[in-house]
Image (tube, rainbow, N blue to C red):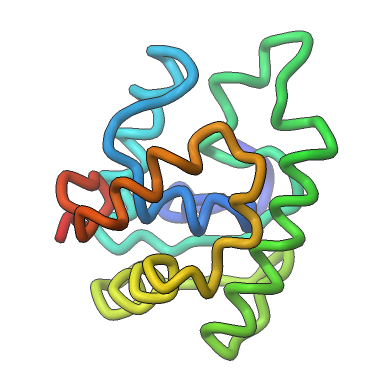
Length: 148
């Protein structure tokens, strides 16, 4: 764990604020999915989120790969688009070091914006976009972060 980070803080890059809304247990690898399930439990328990620049706690299992997509320009561009859209939607700054509490009210509000396509610019060209759209159409049923 990096210096200055509490064990009770989930470090997320900005576009993962959107991904967490539709996580139903699918992922890139079994290790990635198992890690994400543990993070989903922490977020569901209301652990504070700290916005970070670049790879975060969700990315951790992929970082040992030589070609970890977390380091490519695509995810960084998604972070920028998500930070802008979520900040505008919530009326708060979403930047490195920003902190959010993922309580039911925040998650409900974020899901409402996601379902209304107000925060999804970051989802363009994402391989998971179709799955996330299906989850949103299904009213976020079976999601693992603060299930509806």
